[in-house]
Image: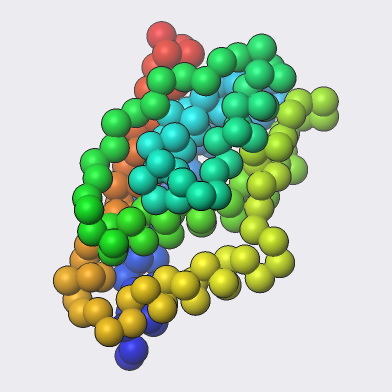
Length: 176
């Protein structure tokens, strides 16, 4: 199998449990009241800020998230600190999780109560955007070996762990 297919497969398989954990933690937030939806958005902000700064500073969704929080009368929370690496592969792995979160956002956006802001969750990929990202991932991995895949997996796992920590910390603050 060419490395491109192996990268996607390795990322998908290695992050399955972490992805499920994040989904489970975020499913505890209600998206139908301003208070719970605000807590949901603050949890996302805690993880999104360091992730975007490291992996995708040129295409930030953070301003949309901040605008949604402001519309709810909330301010941006402090960001969590993320495990980072100077490795390009690590950054691509984190970006895999970050870009994948847009897919989930499109599903969640439909569950947000009428009248609540949804700019952040509606920041989905344009048509073909997810496929274009995967092609860019493949191009970045071209000519690389198993070490590159391992570092990409570490980046993706770190991103999912950060989202899980953000959800847990916001739930603790909210239900304190």
